[in-house]
Structures are given as structure tokens and as C-alpha cells.
Image 1 (cartoon, rainbow, N blue to C red):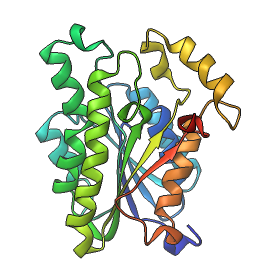
Image 2 (tube, helix red, strand yellow; image 1 turned 90 degrees about the horizontal axis):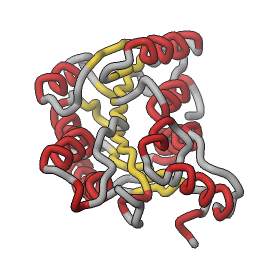
Image 3 (cartoon, helix red, strand yellow; image 1 turned 180 degrees about the horizontal axis):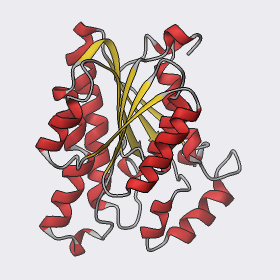
Image 4 (cartoon, rainbow, N blue to C red; image 1 turned 135 degrees about the vertical axis):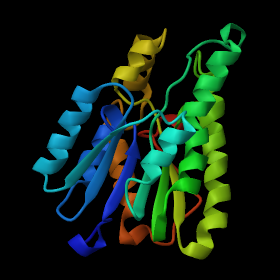
Length: 245
């Protein structure tokens, strides 16, 4: 974003209290920008994110909400009279092999990770020229142990990115997704082979390190910049080159 006037005025980020969502909120925080920090349970973490947004000159609005709930999504969509940027980052799901998944696990994963991308895009009063950004992961394209449900959800999100980009183009609304490689966040503790995955990424990533939440936040900022005004319907891979191997 090249000048204050280029910055979005209102930003709604799901799952913004920690990890990648928090990094995105802090990257976009600036005078004249109001960021809705959505969270599910951790109010303390959300408060801390909001405080850091304000310390950077932005305004912050906290809103607890479960993106699996249609009523909660409607409440989020009504938070601003107009939304300049919608980022769907929230993702909750079961990390189990396909034969260990129960129907409730499958529903939990798709209802929190895929469905809100469609529903919030439909419900939010998106401004003409607004941007919608999804957050995906390499499990949408490659095998990751225990990632059957989440990989399906993320692949669906990437497909939906292309559909929404065409349908919203008449309103000059751009829709893109950032697909991250292995990112060092608290989520890794829930993977049975999380330590091995980290070691693998450290050894094999061409750029020589594991990804950080700030790397994804930087890609989001890039897609929101004026230089990206002709980019829509794309999935931007941000993984230090790991997917090339």
C-alpha cells in the first residue's frame, strides 16, 4: 500500500487472535484503518491483538463468534456498514486419517474452514473494489498425514476463490487466496508428526527456513496493494520453494 489513502478503511479477519490471523491484523494496522478481530474462545489473546493494532495507530473491534454458526456470521457481517477487506483465516478441524474420521469431524472441518468463506462473502456488505482473501495451505495440493478433511476443505476454498472472483468481478471486487507452506504456529502441536514436519521443512526448503505467520501476512498485504489491482482468482503459494521439490 503506497500511501494512507490506499489503505483499506475496514478489515474483517476471522480467527484473528493468534497465529496467522494476528500477524495479518498487525500488518494491516495503520491510522485510518479499523480491524475487526474475530475470535472463538481466547478473549485474552484477542485483547492483546487489539491492543497491538491500536499501538500501531489503527482501530480495533473485538467480536467473539463461531464461523460455523450462521447467526454469528450474520453478526460479523453487520459489524461495519461497508467492508473493504474480508480475510477468512479461521480454521478448526480434525487431524486424523480418513478411516479414523467421524461424520462430526468431517462436518466440523468443512463448516469452519470452507463454508464461512462462501457465507461471509455473501453476507458482508462488500464495498465496490473490495478484496476478499482466503488462507489455504499446501495440504490442499499435497499429502500431509492426518489432513484428509482439512485438505479437502482447503482445496474447496481454492476452487471457490476462482468461482467468486468471476461472480464478483462486475463489482470490481477481487478474490484471491494465499496458500502457505509449513508455518511455525501453535497449530503444529496438534499434528502427530509435527516435529518431523518441522525438521523436514528446515532441511529441504530452498530458502532455508520454516515459514512464519508474518510471511503469510506479507503476502496478504501484497495482494491488497495497488500493484495487485489486476490480480484476481489466484492462489498465491508462499512456502519458500518447498512445493517445488
